[in-house]
Image (cartoon, one colour):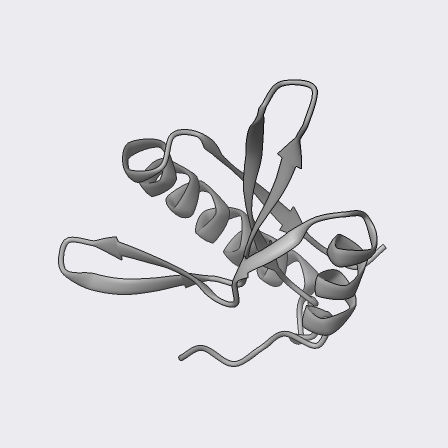
Length: 100
């Protein structure tokens, strides 16, 4: 299991406060027999549309020696996860949570 980011609980609490149900912590993906983990998977019921909206959230704190290096790594991971989700769960949106 991957280590939780410094902002993990803050992002999780913000999603719950906004009406999201945390379904997976972490959200598991498989790619070519390997296990990958997006930090959170959440769902929200959409009463007007009689369906649900599904998201996955990758959380990054940028605590390394170089914020630019942290950003490059986060974007690479985001693009990789987005490609896998588009094949395995095309109805799930991916978000990147970063500090303000």
